[in-house]
Amino acid sequence: MDIKQIDWEAMEWKTVRRGIERKAFGSDSATVALHRLLPGHELAPHSHPNEQIVYIMEGTVDFHIGEEVIRLGPGSLAVVPPNVTHYGVLVGDKPALNLDIFTPARPEYEQ
Image (cartoon, rainbow, N blue to C red; front, side, top):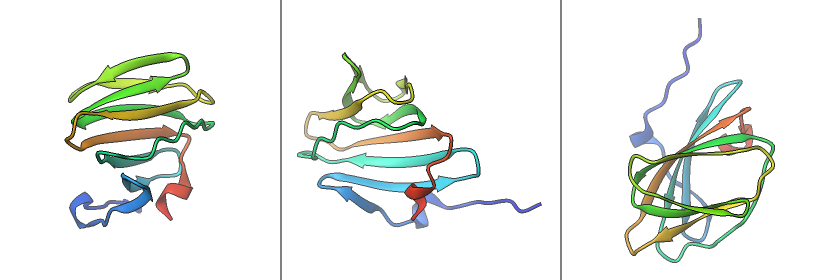
């Protein structure tokens, strides 16, 4: 059996766009991505065919999912259905850290 493992601390942050950084790890069926949102980050409404579970670890984010806006703080979770336009807006002047779980996997995140 081949067990895949990583050390988040050893991974380098990759810049996604202005003010958004990512570390990602995946399997054949799911991807886990750690995102850091910095003050002044670029907004990018988007959708994808993957279901996404959002877990806010630090900071506060107003998460726009379809026509709804929900405020998520540390310990909060939300589910983004496939093919629904969504994006997050940082609240305040402190960075936010969120863990996203995608199914099916997003291998492009690991490149």
